[in-house]
Length: 371
Length: 169
Image (cartoon, rainbow over all chains, first blue to last red; front, side, top):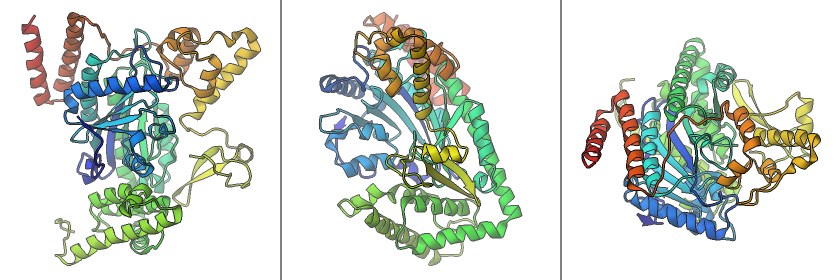
């Protein structure tokens, strides 16, 4: 186990793309909420108890096979830009980051060497074990986090109740403590105005949706996080399988919507994609929201092969690295909102231009695929 | 998030409601205060935290109306009161689950559709035997899962580990 260290390149392996259904599903995550016996939950834990909880969590992380060579960052030790980097990479929640204040919070993030497992310590619950995967890979993410849970639970005594299951601070997480989610791009359903029906449908079968940044965040760029609503009364496998089945259907609906658009309104669609590209390629100031919305059009165009560049990896990277903390870090300082918008526009222009030149200089089939 | 934002409609009151609509094929989000939202015929939004807190607040009201004594004793372990819980939606410790059991059971049933955990069982015992039994049960469960999902590499690994543990009995 390593304490602190560089955040460069950590937790962004999924940006390379390439997972199952990678054109529609960006990433998958499964988390388990766990609390230790004998300590108040973080909302009630004072400085001393929080420190002890972190000490115990470190010992358990050190002992866990799944987390060999993990890195642990204490939020108190990170500067505000670094904390936001973790947020923009979806490795921590806003709640964890906001725990840092004048008193030491002992809130921490542990991340496995290969970035596919993590633990948040002293968030809303003592431990939030998380499994990450690129693309649509619920089962894989669940199995990894399940194994980590067994390892940690052998070392640390969890708070468990024979009826309520794993005890959590909020009753919406009690039982399995499991929240599985897929980050899914649904421009086809939004453009064909089918999205409300789909969202209503998923809420009727016990699922819910959130925006890109999880709880409380709004939907931007047609990116939805679908997840299970309830955590009790079903087994972990049932919860995971149910989400997988419903998300699979949503993916099918999205595909059909895209086919309808291509068939019924090809010119409108192509115009939308190229306008998005045109603005992203030339704008001098871009808010995060505008960037995310335009990137949605571009991503759709790439998926439908209406435009040949950029690659999916570049689209993913812009999505994360184009956000404000990443832009601030690149210039080695903190940017105000207007400066960040200018820096973001320059970054997006550069990324798109680099790919444009590298591909137009080559053959007619830049992605190695026939057009 | 609507933190610190003003209502898009009146520009005066703080925005408390987030309304997502589709206009000309674009998904748009409006931030509204409760007054303007009501005028537009919008009531609640599916924001994750608010409904629980509202729900708890409503529960609180009926309970207070029914009996003012119902405020109850704070949790003897962490000092959380039922008013704290209504305000934050969070319990303070594992003992709160026993202390507020009566009320939580109904709340959990309404929120979760069930009040009985049927997922993983957990035994943490200082004794080697308890540990080993729990570990074996966990590994058998994961083995079954690995076979179901045709992850034969994991299955073979688990099978060997289970055999190893059983052999050392």
